[in-house]
Amino acid sequence: MSSIFKNFLVNWDDIPRENVSESIERQVIHGDELTIVKLYMKSGACVQTHSHPNEQFTWILTGHIRFQYGENLEHVVDLKLGDVLHLPANIPHNATCIEDTIDFDIFTPTREDWKLPTGNYYFSSTKNGSK
Image (cartoon, rainbow, N blue to C red; front, side):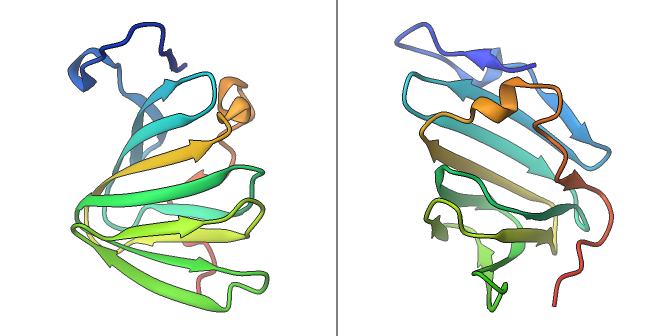
């Protein structure tokens, strides 16, 4: 399901892509204290509203994605090339791809839920109820 980082040097080309929905693929590296993921998302792909005990940074490499976040999803931000979003732990959030998007997500501590078959429930190709 995911790659465990056991070496000091890893090349993204050596990390297999995992399909998490019909419109989202990812490559994952788990370290001892953090998880880094490269997400490949098609236009219209959605990440359903969720929260997690991990601090998250999202760095946009290509494309355009809209995030909603906050206790009542009161904040809306559009991210494009070079933008970085910081989400503290336990903050509800969702996302919708406006264009095909590639991003890096960095989580600390490591995403233990992604090591389980049920840990991907919020990845979707349907509208997530964004405002």
